[in-house]
Length: 289
Image (tube, rainbow, N blue to C red):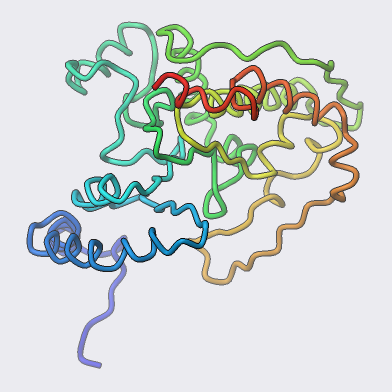
């Protein structure tokens, strides 16, 4: 083959600029936009109206062409919202009439080292969406906290700010006290991670999205014992950056033991009920409509 192979990270700045231009033109240029719009409207309606009882959700993450939100809205497709992976077309939690640079300046004045766009704003998610704290292609919550402590600090500031500006409320008190064993290397850290996981579950349940879906690892993270002693890296399902990685995650507990863990089921039941997502109350976002 006469085409030279090269890696983006070690290429010259000139090559990287050219590649970025090609990428932007491909995803956001008008040349492809009309083709994608016409192709989607020709193929997707038959899938949506197939009458097989399937609720369609698009994985509209990453580089999303500008035509995608409009097509999804026309077809009534649910979007996917991962808090740590905000979309370019996703709204943040600050008022629309405040420019992004001014928003970040406001945060600095408040002593917060965060960016308005680094994390998603759950309170402004559209009803036609599925929200989740992570997914199979992302690190589970406990591992994500471990990977970058500076980012974790920014995320904790983000959560505190959401409460301060009234975009969310604190979760209800726990029904059962945590009792970490002496075998844990750092029980105070385990309790802190457990509390953060519970806050995240609560915030997603309170989001206006039609569906809130949680990876089991993130639900189990609410309990220090017996789940918090497992190394977080063992809970990873997929690592898209590693071509040698294979899917081997297994839940250590049986379904029967999980269902009989009243401390876990009581906690989840209370959060679901008090967020308004129980069968009787329905989704908070829908009620507000």
